[in-house]
Image (cartoon, rainbow, N blue to C red; front, side, top):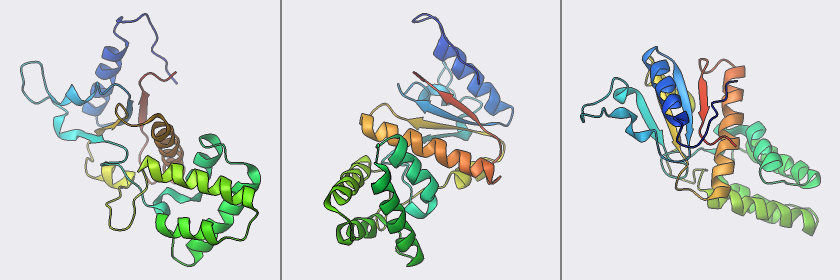
Length: 210
């Protein structure tokens, strides 16, 4: 874990960009949480020509070019979001897990079916209200693909650039609640993929990490 710190305008982001670009040139896979849309320009040199990593840059915008289907997200990542980002109480979380497992067993794990299952689930009103509130927050984030929408898989993104890639997650123009969900989802999913050796080791840069 490395932290770049310093006074305002002292070059922290510039150093981070140099490090991330150099790592990609060496064949590494770098993910960046870009909160100020500063990394999009790394595909172009000052003279207007394409940079050495332009063909290996991928820019993903949560809710637009970055959406996930529920099966790919998985129960582990979803419970992490509900616990750490949306503060879902324990009793409601247990009911959510039961709903998820039921839908998964019936091969009906979609956002539409999840909403219907919550509305019809036998639980007390406090639990159902808590589940519905979090469900609508997940819907508003636009991070979860609905029927017919294209979803992504990080394995596929990496596989398209076997010689290294800079994967920029653009967080500048999305609402704060969606930003928190996106970060929690990505961290949880990347850890899961790494633990199961489904992706190679990665570098993760967090701009404005505080």
